[in-house]
Length: 391
Image (tube, rainbow, N blue to C red):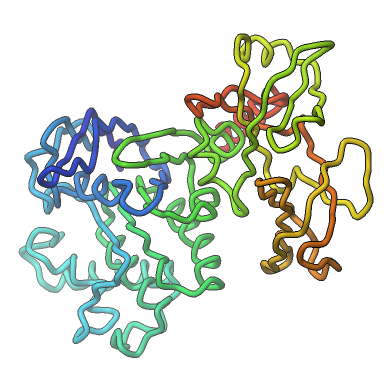
């Protein structure tokens, strides 16, 4: 197994800079997720680790070796792509065995019988782990998408690579199978103990799989941390908006400090939002007039009657998503997303009221969009520390 380091790695394609001074450290046996929108540079990082691409600047280190000039076949790195890339004329058994039959990876080069015995044992071990041991005589055309992906994963793992790279391997699977495969991928990685890097643009995959996540945009690393750390303490508004479905609500607010701190929401300037006393947050916002307040939809609540502190709005939309619904309330020009039960008796344009758990808010600098803090930051840091211990 191996620790992986990227040190000030830059990669360009013509005039386009795909990676800008990327520095990352992935620990031995870690399940590390690269997360970000399309075109962020996630796959380019994998390609530079695998040796498919060479950085113009910086170093890639696997274990104790700088591998910039090492041939891809000599890096002991296995990669699984979004498309399965199976050999259509080979059985499942032969597809999985193919890396072990390559001259570079034969364990017993001078003893064919011994070599085939080793291959058989290794293929059956991986096939059992991937739950495809009853499919070994089938051709890829006789398999479902989920089974093909398992074969592709098994083919990558059979030679026990030091590094396992996965580029959105579950993208073509249906939702039910994708959810099942997430758990199996995590179990598989733990069983094999292989340092794994997984690329996705799905925040649920990132949150459920990763020991740590790197959020990437436009070729730059925005934040690295555990899933709780990034979700609860996002470095900026971009990260906060990526990490959540439904997306976080962001309000433009003015800080009012007369007779205690409060907020004046731009959509309702006549209505103040009282804030709890919090010395550290007050210090961080000293001198600021405008801030952005982030509220997750689960921290905004609807009411059919006016209650103290509620804002008046109208139902803009109501979407059912599985076992929950998203109620969007228009207050002025702002759309507030709220979690609601299925079958809520509402109509479009109906008057409705919303309240906000301001003590669960995340505060951002209105100018830089950088994270300022939150009232329950101490509790969140304890949660993050516990998660780090478990990881």
